[in-house]
Length: 269
Image (cartoon, rainbow, N blue to C red; front, side):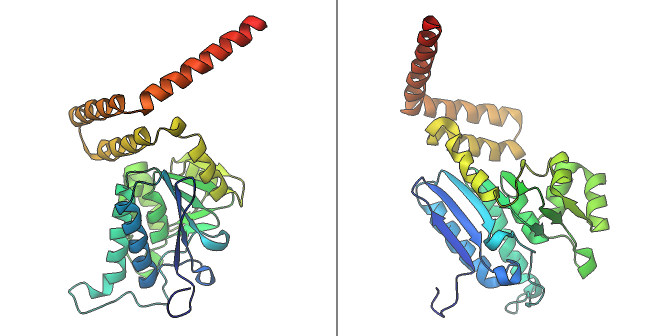
């Protein structure tokens, strides 16, 4: 509980295995975002950014529902600045940019639905694991609003202008299977298992080579905006870093042991 006795609107759990889980925690309001949630999200990211990198981040919503986006029942304004009526959105934009910049793999585990700015938040992650019955939508126009949180950018970048325009202008809802076919989600899973499936990914990721995983994420971040020459230069630096560490020799020894075991089993057979 927070100081006022109310449950926190966002939960951060860094597990013993090094995986961080952030949970949007306004279930009575379909986990819609508020000023308080964005403030608590910022504090959670402060912790993740300033500590030894977590092995992975899983983002989910409480009680089997990701989020309905911005809370239209709460005013989005704060202060008297030139863009005061968009203050809550600006906070959300900062969070989305920080999620994209984290040097660790990030997975949005979507149960129920992800609408409006929360869909943008999910698309800011490296991967989306969606329950079979999950829904996605950007119904901004019906509220008299423009797409926010980068929704137009994410969709146009992934789908091209024509398909992004059809989704945004129609305001229609996408099911998980269509989202998968369009490349908007990484994996469709059994309802109720999205978080479990996301957490299970860590055990198969990088064979325990945390530095290689982190540097790969950093490479992917640069790959979105850099040219090939820049990426090649980073590859050299990162490859050198990996070769100088303990993970490459350990991985090679593990590979040799596995190869020897297979050879011995074949000889016995």
